[in-house]
Image (cartoon, rainbow, N blue to C red; front, top):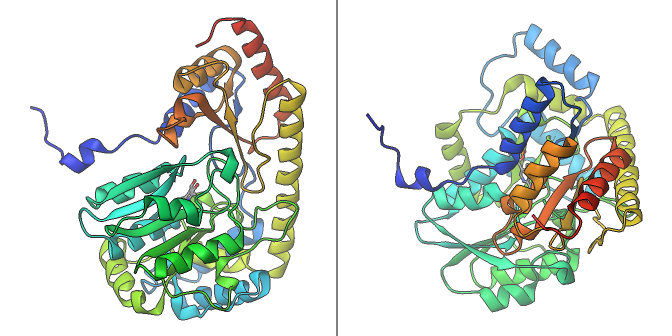
Length: 394
Ligand SMILES: Cc1ncc(COP(=O)(O)O)c(C=O)c1O
């Protein structure tokens, strides 16, 4: 018997990085020496103070649901964090704690989209955003971006691709897969452009904090920010807590009631021990340790960039944040999935095909995550792989 599934579910594309990760783990289990540069999560464990706080909370019986919007103490502490870290005034009542920022994205999109509404986003972009929109039977308008605009949307591009069905624009700064930023004045212009057209600007700041050679910035720090801006963030990346599944949204006051009702139905509350752990992650000492980790990522970025250049590879942008390098491999392949599969098989270096992130140039790009310290060795293996290709392309 073939069991039926819904049309929307049938169309959902896989998150290919998970497939590469599976293959890499399989090869590892068979004894291969794998360098993991595919997965987008810090290799550092979460902080010991987070573990202790979560264990203590669990031992004290804090294992029940919290309010759907999150532990009041955590919402307060995040509000204080915005003030200290970003010089941004954010009311705790506007902060919604969610199981990972993945849930925050889903929650927010569910709150604002009707079927057939349109959402503008860059190509390449974080792939799950496309799927979230399509699950709601709304449609994505993908706007091709390239190195000239740091792979980011601009107001000019919004103007060009605008139509009255567009309900929201999704951007990320720093972005996945490119690690590039949107300048704050451009973000502000986008917010006003959209406010004049009753559209939302959803700014994914999940990689904020992991920014190099400049201070971390939140769009929420602007004094005259229009009300249509929704910010998404997470404890996954900067705080190194991917497995704790904890994120948040900062939303306009008018949306909090609907976000609460949706959260009550969709997941009831974010994991309770994780919320207590997150309280510890926001303490001053923890932030000092996280800053040290940020510096390590910056050194790795520089090492990777330099090693790639020394190997003779052409790079179009120096990533300013996150932990990714987006690499144009059109000289060697027009099939990035095959390229990544062969690279993994022949050298043990696991990287992600660009097809995960975009349709326009996905086949000629790959993403390297510097979430592993064996950077020079990985680049040397890639160099040999490419040398062995000779004049043939994949
Ligand atoms: C841009 C971006 N947004 C959101 C997420 C979701 O992360 P999480 O659900 O762990 O908070 C990711 C994960 O890689 C991401 O890269």
